Every structure is written in C-alpha cells, then in structure tokens.
Image 1: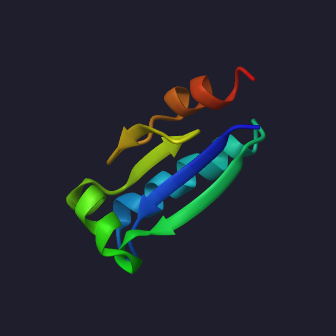
Image 2: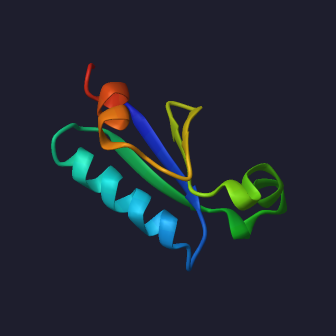
Amino acid sequence: MPNVVLYGRAGCHLCDVAREVILAVRLRHAFEFTEVDIDGSDDLVRAYGLRVPVVAVDGVEAFEVEVPPAGLEALVGGR
C-alpha cells in the first residue's frame, strides 16, 4: 500500500488545502497517510522551511506547495 506523508506546519493555509486534497483522493484510493509538523524538528525546518507543504509518496518528494489531485491519484492509484 502506498505511503503518503504531508510535511507542514500549524497555521499554514496551503497545508490545510493540501490535506483536503489528500483526504479527498484517499476516499477513492487506499493509502497510508501521515502528517508531520516540521516545527518539531530543526532538521525538518532546515529541509522544508518555506517549501511547505511538501508531500512525499513512498519516501520520494512528489509535490511542493500545491498538490494536484490528478498527480497524486497517478502516484497512488495504479497499485
């Protein structure tokens, strides 16, 4: 089963939008979903900083700032 991780931070409007897209796609395709608040780790803040939200699929960064539903479906739906 695919694994989707959303790296974001509290109060991030774009992170909220990305989460909505991910959850909508999850209604049609099964995958694991984890959210990570980057503010809990200096390393994550350095890695993702102003790029949030960042979405990784199976450990590979797939999207930054915007998550197109069709793009996410293409990555998680063909399994």
